[in-house]
Length: 113
Length: 113
Image (cartoon, rainbow over all chains, first blue to last red; front, top):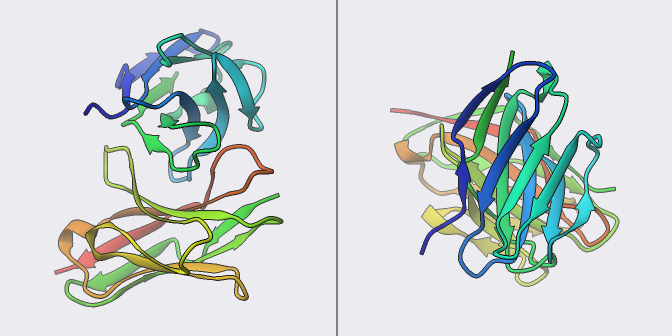
């Protein structure tokens, strides 16, 4: 049974560029959440997707957007990258939006120079 | 709004001795509480969860936690530390009002040989 997968593993971008990160949920899961983990900090909730719609959102600017596809996979897009966007981006999946037990992927390490 | 405070940023114990990682939470509603572990360069793994059933929760790898509503605490314990327990541990709270999971800043567990 495949767990949550994310791609790419590492990414280096220049300030002002745009980036797209991808996530495939654990088999049987229909809800995907994204988190940002800065160095030395706990993850912070960005947003959650269910039924191809954004259901909840944390305190992140509109530069952060996402998408969920019919097969439940998801993308996180970040526009106009800032140096402060450098972080580990984690994807988590669950059985439903109310399914608090979330399973995390290994993350994508984004470095903005 | 919900919040989590992990009382120790670093904890060092000798192999074979007990482990205690402390966590206090704040939530306006009946929360769900979790402990996750993050090994270097790996994703987050769920150790255990509390969702208003038994107040003493047993998890994987010999870890357990006790929910104490009067003290708003959810401390993580293990009777005997193993070298493989060295990792970052996160206390996490969730309730139906706040979006996503709210993580503490983490406790770095060091195991001395």
